[in-house]
Length: 205
Image (cartoon, rainbow, N blue to C red; front, side, top):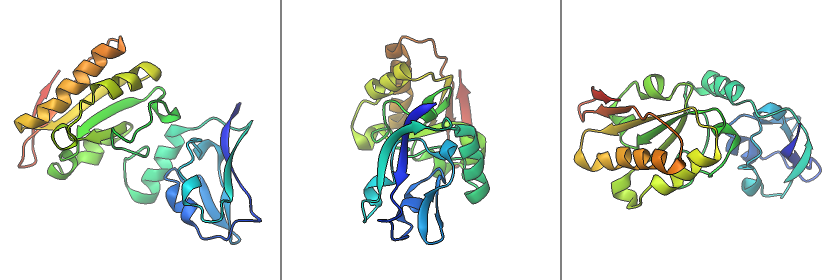
């Protein structure tokens, strides 16, 4: 298929490795002192690597390439670091409205305190999901509009919410429920509520 991909000018590249560090999917590696695109199917085409290159050696090109393989990327990331995080960025406010990793994804929307309150958060909630996090109280925004656009523009399969038991955290649950309504799609929204002492307090379906 023809899609937008990064290309690396090896004549400009000085092998600093910043692009490889910025590529959370593991598509870029340093080979013989130069940055190389190791696998087309690991590159999501979003270009997180472009702004970190001090030599301006990376650019976009439309070319024949294997489709982005989110499942393969997730397996690679888990193997390398033990994380269940499938994409970057994770903050709702920073997330794009449309991205390859959203297609056919099971979406987890979590209050950002939940990962600290529950020790098995990655394995219990994040595995095989695209994760978005935020805090409705601290960010002081209504996430429903942006989440609704994400649901409209992508073929999301399911949504799960994880929040804390504290009253202010219910804003996350309400925002996702409103987003599901705004999207015009029929999404059941299961909600897991965590206690401040690290237990799954209840599940609401």
